[in-house]
Length: 127
Length: 127
DNA sequence: TCCTATGTACGAGTGCAATCGTACTACCTG
DNA sequence: CAGGTAGTACGATTGCACTCGTACATAGGA
View 1: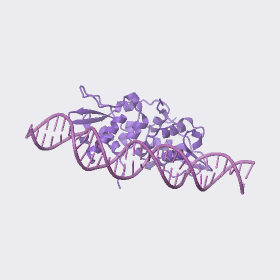
View 2: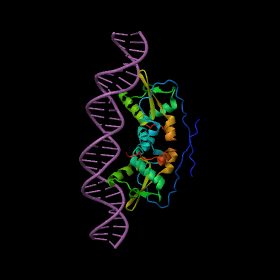
View 3: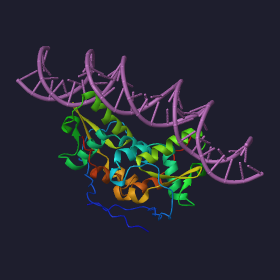
View 4: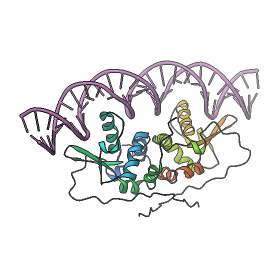
């Protein structure tokens, strides 16, 4: 019997505002697969995206321009799509913008603790 | 503030027996990288290996033949090496055999909760 | 000493993912 | 309606990971 000491953040779940646009296609909670989610999170850029959403969100969801990522737009599209299709994030279309947020409640329900691991992650030192 | 309900297994840490052979090359605890570990665990076969080690170990570590995996030997070598190099497992040479066990304590120290997620994982239904 | 069992090393084939440039679409603003 | 803005679609390239066959190495037993 080992007592797991929980370190810090324990990300809080934001309630969904009313009257949002429909989410883009995504897997349902029951369909989430650990191997797929882990695959989506095994990329440093995507970890950066998810962590920033978890720790620095100023609103419910954020457009891809909010992140300040130094990559071509088409690369960002690729990664945001990968996160959504794995079930890590939910994306909605607001006119021109496509905004993302992390499916914290769904991930906690299926994979408790995983979101917290991403929240405390730090990128590798670039030597 | 959300209280995370911890479901079940909470894998116990086996103490290392004395006088074991030296482990094969592996990353130190401080060197473990979340993205690398998640990448290693994003493969169903490797999840199967780790889960079996966690739940069905009869001894401290197990040779690759103990798992009953229907793959060529060279494929298995590949996956066991991937797990070791990511820091998920530790491998030791016992004469002919190379036995593996999961670095539960190290993983719990760096990524609390992750091992438990693997323990409750179940493979996808094969339709 | 030869045979078998366990597993590695190496190389080839395959496919997918990451990356990015370019062209395009859609919406908002004047 | 013209321009700017946010982002997608598509295609090409590249590299890596998974898969596996074959050859090789080594330990232990008959």
